[in-house]
Image 1: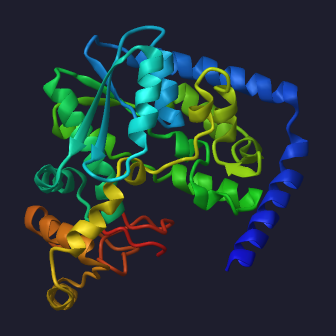
Image 2: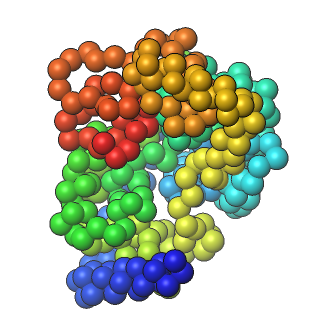
Length: 347
């Protein structure tokens, strides 16, 4: 297995070195970096329409960029949430950038009781029982709720960068033509939970990376600048990292992408739900919901979220003719390979 991984990695590095590096000249790169900084500066500035603004700060590249730009114009309140007792690297990195910028930073730790309390409003706001989506969104919702209690009215997020700039690791092994096609498909279906979650709390979520000018520029940017190799590591949104090299702390500029559920520690929720129900009870309920609702439940965490979904939204069903999810019978876009309702992938 280790030899296989090493071989795959060497092929990947060779692919990127040959296909991308010779096509990118230093003067072209600096011009693009300058354009990115200018457009994002304008996008963030346009988002600062109140003095009651906060930001969901993970300490990753995207939120650190937004926080750094904002510091030129105002003092933000910054919010980070982590699961109590779980590894949560976002706390270290978000605290680092907040200290550098001199922002008031609040770290909120979720305990088991609060997790249980928040699942229902998250499921209701998003209309999903996809475990990955809920684990990510619990963190977002909890951060927003803390911000709301502090009197915040507008919340900034770093959404959109990974979609526009090929930040996800599943893009890394694609050839350039395949990458361009997958990005186009993603741009036609992307959505962000921060918007409905904020609305459910009476807040407004603002997403500078989706500012029309920056979004248009990012979509038109050649994908050869989006995935590249640095020091033997493959980076998505490479040009965005490059644009803020020397502006952000080095450990944040080139921090490896960490999904919210890992950065906040909520990925460990699967273990929590696994301990709450016996295998026998799970198998019985899994069979019941398959027979009665035609819903496939993959594990005990999935079951827990589905029972809440079923109680507050109802049984998944078709609303139109066309493509259906084979695991929950929900409508999905014709070109989609992912079900936003149950999380089935690939379809």
